[in-house]
Length: 263
Length: 263
Image (cartoon, rainbow over all chains, first blue to last red; front, side, top):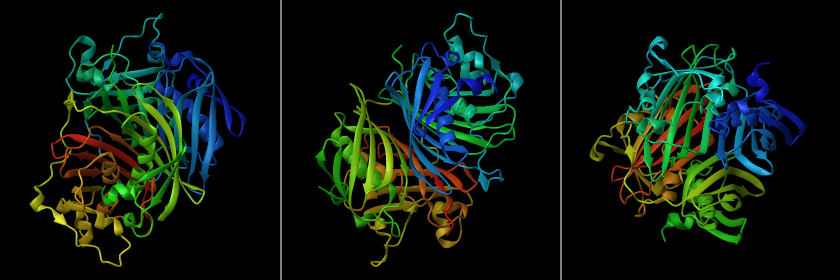
């Protein structure tokens, strides 16, 4: 069992309630990362489902969460031979943090009937940039859980050279050796800095809705995470993420709508 | 009041319940179109919200719906100065048809801070193909509500010449003159034939999750609807839709995950 497995563990209380403990290791400057919170919630949903995989997850984020005990509350709305639909809430101190709708099903491993390629070609990993290790006193604890190797132009904003368009691209794997699985993918779709940083924006960019689809079970090895946006307007932006596995297969797609930070 | 306004009308019963009447004019071979059903549901959500626009809607589709009386059941989960989050269900004869999470807010009309262009260039409208009017006895009544002018290669499957990739593109407006609004956009994001038809698939392709974001209020005139998919695998496909208004502004984005038809 990896640290990530432990940090996302959900303990069944009864058929509608799971106890969880939100781990301080997934913090992004205080609040916990949204992808991590989804992984926790999905552990409970899948445990309660007759199906194995969280195929589609629509999550709306109501408020930021801090570490500590919390609960996942479930209601199975419909269950059938191919899929089960569940309404799931992550609740902390009586407050709803995430409201979600999740469809679980069981994916096979057949070759795709039709597939597109990545929307952007990544440079080889040796040309990509690793970020310096976080300072021990940092409250960006999430950074220590993952290894990210960034496509250089998309991280230029760190040195005051934003590319001028919303984008972020990196190779991704867990710092503690672990094969990627659907819960790692839930983390990966929300793991990069907000794409608007590359367009010159700054500050906490709260997600309002994040919907993601598990398209295949990932092969072992590095993941490639490609993120972009189409429109920054009226204080809102979209962030579209595709995740490819080491076998060159599209394994996850997500889109979030978020607020531009004020900071 | 247009026919579409009437067909999507929601009458308040109390703060958690609206009565609606699902209109036989939006049928696609028996079941009602999912975009139409979302428009009905969103009328109730917006009526009950202090905010004016359905900015983000995540809808999971549980079963097909037929015309007749139904209800929208609402629960406002959180409301604030900038946004209200609502859980909404469309219920017909005691069965849930759609479960959704909707964030309402009020969009302004300022110019975008950053915008991409359309992902595919459309040919001029005079080079696009109108479909023949539906036969009067047809149960594809939805077709009579809209005018669609298709980018020719994307409708080649109708004559046995699918383009070989998941795509659909058309100019769109309501048949009865009406300026587009957020409810027309809810219809537009699900109005084209499933993108998999163009990849050679056939049959009823049930939507499992459709999430869409209202990015701006549309200008009067034709809309441009551009749909594509990235992966057809294991019986599942994605359909990504962008809607541009006559002023060249990105007004809606959607993605659905659906099942490939067996027919």
